[in-house]
Image (cartoon, rainbow, N blue to C red):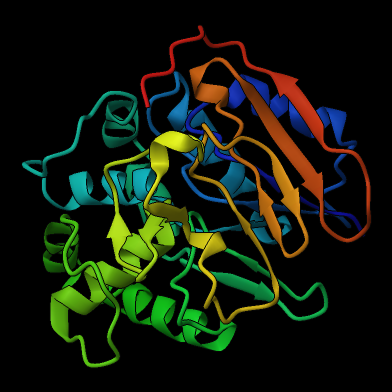
Amino acid sequence: MAVFVIGDVQGCYDELQLLVDALNFNAEKDRLWFVGDLVNRGPKSLETLRFIKGLGSSAICVLGNHDLHLLALAHNPASPVNKTGLQDILDADDKDELLTWLIARPLAHYDEQLDTLLVHAGIAAAWTIADTLKLAGEVEHALQSKHATDFLSGMYGSKPANWADTLEGIDRLRFITNCLTRIRYCTRAGELNFNEKQAPSDKTEGLLPWFDLPNRIATSRIVFGHWSTLGLMQRPGLLATDTGCVWGGQLTAVRLDTKAPAVQIKSLQPKNFTG
């Protein structure tokens, strides 16, 4: 069995089909991991969602911030979310089936045999793998409860910026969601910073990528996407997979169960990176 992780698809369905073909993927024995952001901005979010859902147990997906945007819109059309790339899903005959499947996806997945954690964006430095799974479960419970609309309305915002075990209610859920689906940079004290999106450079002085905080506890391999300006990054214990397909870059797959070169498909989208 081969296990591949695929970076942010964001509705780039045609590139996904080319990539799956290039992997010689066999749904009967292989597995595809998706880092989230299946939808939005790209031209074929509906087709992408249908395809990945149709993979059944051959696919493992975690939710990204754009997937949460779709769910927020579906629960409240007045949500402050750009509908571009999402309206086809909201108008589809199988909308309810697709969204029922999507809202049941986790925010974090851990494979003990591979000692690998899958998240969309990152985790807080103070969290162990067990902490991450437990806290992700709190958000998953909120999403799958009768209070889902309240959570999806209240998840927007960048505060609180620091983690504390004593956080409660929507502040606690918002921080967990922001770490798992939005985080890139932190101050050295661990405070979340959402103003900077570029790759680390001299311009990001005073900020550190979440994975470079010196007091980070988790030691398992962490696989994530979300950060297209960072691109493909393979370091001991870290694998970043968002190579900006929707912006005209590439769609990337990396095999997780053995060492192998990354497989990349050149984007069919125009080069139009805006951050």
